[in-house]
Image (tube, rainbow, N blue to C red; front, top):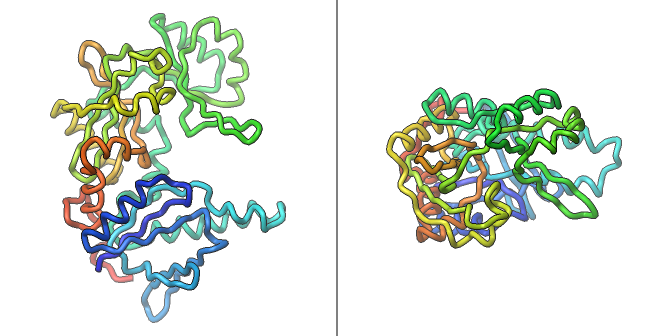
Length: 338
């Protein structure tokens, strides 16, 4: 029976259960590792003895061998080791968290199995600047962009784009007040906003030319299958700049979209550059039919789109994990024994 390790956390959405059930239906064996409960509830051991590496995951009296898994899906590692916060004193917390991260990510990186994407590949994707450079080199259009913490440079860029500019963060940026998470969305920046931009010095931001939108695309790629969907974000005033502001309202407005073959091929090349088998890509289609690449997210949501295609994305992901559908690359050391 082929085993599949899924790295996630206890607060992830129902897609993990759906994927796990699909893997079981196909004869596989899913192992869910909630990293917010590591190391307080999970124990992870990697041992090299008798010239062999063995890796074990223990949870509530049950042991799983990890060194012999078929595939790994690093979904997310949100809230890693959060249980330590109520156990350890502050002077130890930072160092212990560091050891937990090194242990977990070191184990994941070293597993000699098929991986939807290695942890190191996902960290490389954190660079939105490199994403745009690679996309551009592959022939994809990208918006004119300025990433800076210089107020003067930001002012220059915004003034150089009289048709408008937008400002956004490069990471999952949120402000926490009174225990509530306030996500920072993409916003239009106007010349009058530049009068109060001096605090940019302390936190870099990404500025881009404002593109006119016909539709916005979310493209989910799994292995060699491309699932493209479009939404008319311009019909809601609050969604015109960032559709996520009205994500719930627009939930049922997404429709399948036929990508031009040259755009599809370039996106598959982008996946190959990063050596990943899953990616959620955002694209703006302008009124004249130009496709502008914005970014690729290795853990972008797909489940609401999966429901529109009768679970086809879930099925494809499960088959890629079990080796029943083509994978875009193979482990470099697939014949090694360690």
